[in-house]
Length: 307
Length: 174
Image (cartoon, rainbow over all chains, first blue to last red; front, side, top):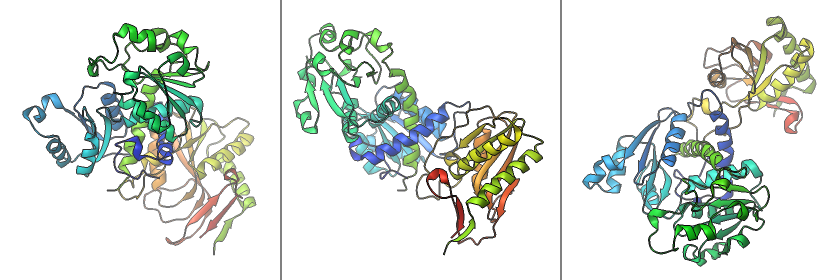
């Protein structure tokens, strides 16, 4: 079994059977991560390059570990110390990295569409690790994996995605992935941050959090992206927390066994209360662990697609 | 026209015989464990473990091994092999591991399986039990316990099916 494309640019390019294959493969890799020797020789001799134009610790580390545990060589291309500061274009940088023999290029960039552009211009496999406000496909896949681990079937679940939907690539990828797998998605947040047009994708929109959380199986919190704010989308973080922060009382509207998720890094006291983040409904650290298995599965499967 | 190599009764008899051979060679079933290679080998390993347990009067640990990530043909295959679960829920260091597979052919799966086993621990010995040995080895590998030796040509395939997969137990040459 293989994926159809050499790249993972967006969830929109995947159908339910592709997503199913990735999740199933990830289950095999989760086993590997539980062993003393957490490394397999599957991609020996391949080279992976992390090309990150935006700060990231967890995603970059997760991809780096995933690549290393598959036995590929990993190069971290740090933009701040590279020729990019000398004015090299994105395309030239990517072609140079490819000429050095990279088989897989993992890219994060503040502009939407960068991963797509590189995928079209390079023979190497390109994995989108987040492009602007567009998509972050591996985050959605690891979220699905985490849900499936606890709830078995994704189909029919009610999932609330809460917060800054407008700027969130995590929310978009999750929306596509969850609806593809048959979940019912609700978006909750201040009207300034939840575009009404998204209703066309078959999701429900709520601005009242207490109503929106009623009887949901999954509460997916988003990080308030301070670096993308400052345009007056909401008055203050204190007021934001009062209306859309996830507190134990709010969580009680959801099903008793609802899962609380967050892609990290968390702003405790802004979008989520510490009691909830550390509470027994929280699977936030599972998400991190599962991210490794899912990224291994993605790299492994992409390496099997012959160009 | 597929030719039947083994039927249900043949397979049953072979498992009984191999269980006795394994017991004899190892002078009992002490510190013995079985690991079946996904997928056919896994079914065989479970059956063999039950038989061995009956002879030795103790439960024999049995695990299943997925070798997809240890294969040597990534560069030449059209598609990535499907990754299945490896489940070896016991310590294999200093134990005698009997690897179990349904068909022994080039020996490349066994090479991969040995590497995979070594990543799980350091067994005191690895032995190999196969239901059918069809020849054509490409590596210096030999089975310790063989159900049936079958001379084949390279164009033929040996297919083994099991009741565990909802089919009748049998091995055929096609």
